[in-house]
Length: 398
Ligand code: ADP
Image (cartoon, rainbow, N blue to C red; front, side, top):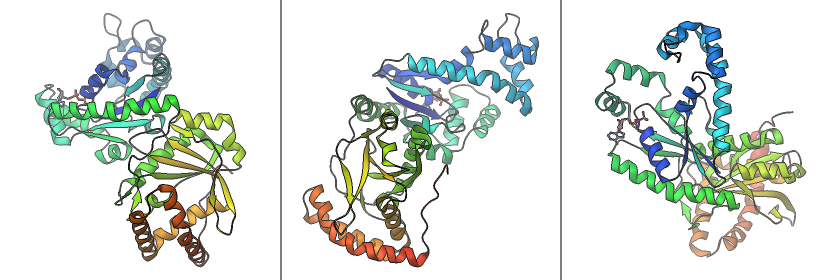
């Protein structure tokens, strides 16, 4: 089951996207519907609300009088907290129940207006944000939905801003254009990403680049890595104690294959072999690759690791799981930080990669041909680390 979080500012077109995904076959769990369900007449939720706020929050026919309740909690943080203490557990429980009821091969879309505000991105395999500028959203709410302008403006201001939404978005569905253009983008998203991602996840297949060529540096790589690392942390908890973006995509302005490399540090590789860890990684969309994996440490030594790949066809990512403090773990970090600190070395590395990519046909041969350069670079990187007082990142949970 693929879990997709769908959000967007009010008036962005989120409901339009949600309805289309449902018609394509997604199981949509609508957070607004769930929030209403848990306080319907006869629910323990409504009883608890009445107990706390009095019968004044009921209409004559016994349903919740939302505006009356809204007036009581508006501007009163204690009252709002009490209300959330009553409703949130019921909302989460009902949401989980609806998700669990979906078929094993479902694409479950959680239509969640406050996904960004509540920092829920790491709970999903993918976050889709429907985006439109404030002015566009305002005029849609006023013209198409007939909302008073002041009301629409106040609602927009109360929500997350676009920067926060962009940071949370794995997929940004631009809805500045026409409805047919939006529909075409949703259709592509469904066929090219959501459906194959779900199938990969179910069958334990990692995605790979169709053309493993060098790409120009993408300034969004670090933000993409950050989202994946948050997901990994959510999945494995404190079994891993370091979570880092490594490799060429972690170095600004460096050409790289469009593969995000990530490193998880574990106290012992036995932790990475624990079936709980392997299963949690796979459920989060990072399947373990079978076989023995290691890096060449030069002078004939090998550094063991475990290797996982992302199932997302829209974002190829490798997760290298290494022992904290081991030479392979440390080298990945030193190398990255050295190239970040030394633009000349970064450019020399880029030149070497570009020249090799033009001459070497296969990925394996390419990796092999890079080795001599790496051996020489190793000494320079370590000298830099010693001279600059380089320190490894902090290990959490100790
Ligand atoms: P949300 O659920 O994000 O609040 P909706 O999907 O309800 O947004 O869209 C807000 C309003 O704008 C609706 O009346 C919808 O029909 C309309 N709308 C959505 N996308 C477009 C678009 N690209 N062009 C014009 N109107 C749109």
